[in-house]
Amino acid sequence: MTSVTDRPPGDAVFDPELRRLAAVVVLGAMMTILDATIVNVAINTLGRDFHTSLSTIQWVMTGYTLALAMTIPLTGWAVQRFGGRTMWITSIVLFIAGSVLCGAAWSVTSLIAFRVVQAIGGGMLMPVGQTMLARKAGPERMGRVMSVVAVPAMLGPVLGPVLGGLIVDDLSWRWMFYVNVPVCALALLAAFAWLPRDTDRQAGTPLDVFGLVLLSPGLAALVYGLSQTGNGHGVTDPQVYGWAGAGVVLIAVFVVRALTRGDRALVDVRLFRDRGFTASGVALFVYVGALFGVTFMAPLYLQTVRSDSPLHAGLLLAPMGIGAALSMPVAGRLTDRVGSRVLAVSGLVVVLAGLSAYTRLSADTSRLLLGAAMLLVGIGHGMMMPSLMAAAYLRLSRAAVPAATTASNIVVRVGSSFGVAALAVALQISIRHQVPGATGSLASVSRVRSPDLPSRLAHAFGGGFWWASAIAAAAVVPILLLPRRRPPAVSVVEGDGSVAEPVDDRA
Image (tube, rainbow, N blue to C red; front, side, top):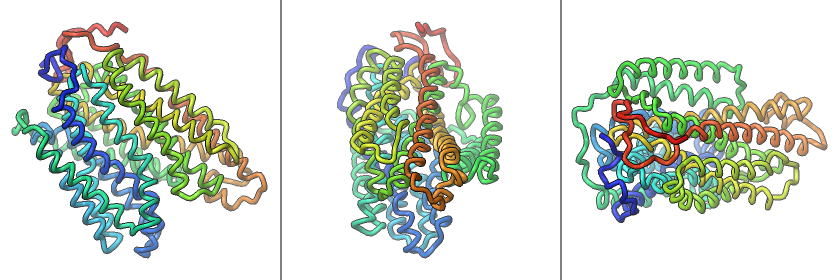
């Protein structure tokens, strides 16, 4: 196999069939990604209505996150075994069923269980949709297609808290789940009408059960351990290093075993032999980690330093979504013309320019300045994501796309958790340094009595954003290792991880 698609190499038209496929993917993916964050602002409301503790009700979010992490590794095998259309429809049915059940939940236990059902469907929707689009688009249109995939991935974390706040303020919390049903039902109808029949599924593809037993719990343990730093636990807490360490060990054992199994492994890790795929993965891991850390710290600054409500704090992220939505379509087209490297570096410079305003925070920094800076971050993000995602597929065969999509989604999931964890620790250290008497946690800050506390806290957050900028800037190293735009008529990485012929990267 020498091409991601059997389309003629020169045909780069965004045809109606590809547009319909993109519309189906965006419709389904938008609500599932929104749902990962929409519940965040309702935790106190849910705890009050179910008469339970905060530590228990947190599992409404944590259970969803862990189930997502555990489901992603199954995606590549499921697409090969059953086909993209079948798995897309199955996933969205599971998500709709989980949403209805969550809205009807009668206890905190039932709500947590139904959130897991939601996550099983939601966890597969994005990688399945990404696989279908990558297979259909081919390298000539990969930038534009990845800009479509990146829009819901960007808007979800930005709009989720805002939508959740509006629903909790004006309606019952149950509508946070019921609102998914009409949108996803429309996506389901569109899938039946527009998605092509599965013609290339491999019915005899065996499931790597032992690999699943290693990788899915390993990812869940790692993500859970890292998430505990964002909940106020220090890196020396067993809740952090115990779970994260166990996850690292399980994943390491999986990788060693997968190297010997090749394409029979749950995820073919030999894909990382390709320079473009590896450089893209490392850049995504580093950059997405920094960005998710920013989305964690920015609303927290408004809530702790300026006593804003969760809804108003969440609105600070809205300009980021607007900026990304404006720049992504343009960036997708430019990526197909000039390659990933130029767009990714340019986008990173714009992101760092926007973050510079947050490194100089005070207790009364202009909200207009904060919003404009976040808009700039969004524009840069919209330039980076399509180019980085497209670079991962540049030299892969059509057969390798499902495994590559699974691996990329795992990298992004772990990178986002790692970024939030690392910046939570950096923020705690900065608070300890800036606020005498504070141990670093926000709970300890509330016990400090000082007239200049808001100013000191603002400087502490500025230090956290310096760390976010440094982490984001580190992504330039793997970005510069990305190959240039793929020249015509070259051999690519096959499904077994090998490269048929040397490719001139013209680096």
